[in-house]
Image (cartoon, rainbow, N blue to C red; front, side):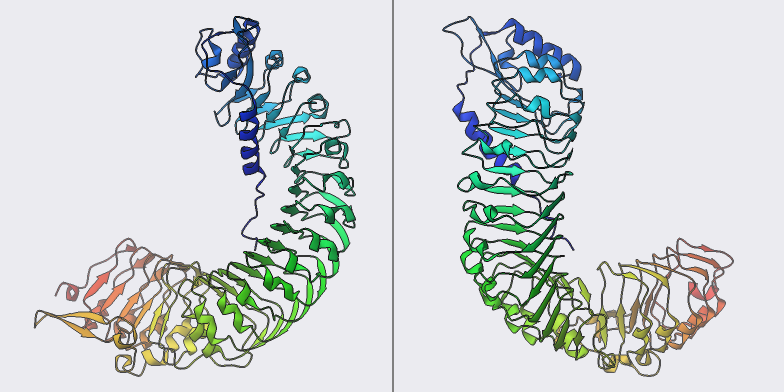
Length: 611
């Protein structure tokens, strides 16, 4: 599973940086007239993109998204220095007329529906400091235009369809933010882009088609806070300069072709919060240096070739939320002191070679929501202390060698938020718990067919699988539930004294409500079951409630249902049943509620149903 889908913080950092740049510009809200050239350029732009919020008067400095500076000492008109129109629903091509705004410093058309190329005339915007064209559908080569913006501080053209290489770019002495992610750029990374700047903070080249090696980070050591290179085709070993980025907070290199070791120098990245290096060919041990990385919140190193044991120093990362090391070749026991990880919400260690028991200290991770330890060599029982994992909703331990299924079910049923449990290929040669009387898995997201082994649960009297996405036919083995065939399950089933609600039944003669023990019931409603109702169901003589409604069941109603002499509620509505209502229903002396609506039944209604 994905960590829960990691999204870099670049966009939010851009907002903060933009606020800083805005405060450094000299603005005015006076009602001076626009410069005639600026006014004409804006009106042509408005005609192309149907900017309806702008009026036809000449005071364009009061238009939505337009900001002017104060030229009152040298001119009676003001010059446009900012054009900020994000999320305005603008559609169409970007007009080249905007290139006739020579004093423009801030240009933001992000989150619109713009298409086509970026006009080459934009090279004339020599004063531009902030450019944000992100989240549009712009295309074509763009490096030639961008190379002209020598005053640029923040450049964001992410989430478009721009192409070409970046060999023309360079010499941006004021550059702090450079984000070209989620485009179709090719070639190698050009270190000239950031080399001239002493204040570069964010570099985001992710989700493109860059190849070659990672080089040229030497002059970024004191300023760079975010480096995002994920989802490219970069290769080679991780350079030594990477470990000297002392201010680095986010490093994402996933889905490339990096190989070699993750060095002990990782300990120098003391500001690191996100380390995401999954989907490479990194190998060797994971360095045990996390005692220096106490700010770490997310560590994702899945799908590499790491070997050796879990670094014990991970337990010192008290802020860690996500630890994902799945699909490696890690060995040894999972012996971290999880008491030191109170904020851990996701633990993914599946598809490794871990052995030994499950760690008891894991129960101290009260925020844990996702726990996946599948496909390892784990042994022993699920610890009783796991009942404390009250936030857990996904739990996978498949393909291990765990034992004691009754204990496992007893522990996991105390995890009140648990919706997905995968325990396949464990508990070898163990029997289904014979003492289980109530099985309620309703209102989950279960799919697939109903397991036939449920029919082997000898004491089961209450089966509730409603409101899931189960498919296939109703297993005939459900007619083998012994407690519903031969014994009066009401005499043995759990009652309200142990937390199970009592069953309310109205005594017609006494005009009163009687509290009885839990009814013998089978709820399979609200799924996608098909096929026919198995006639063997008539063997379940002790059944009180049978609800098969809201499925895709077809065929006729089997007359064997009339053999359910204790049946009080029968709901077969919202299916595809055909034929007539069996006349033998007159034998259902205890039947109080019958729903057959929204089917294709025909013929007469048995007169006994009116009485």
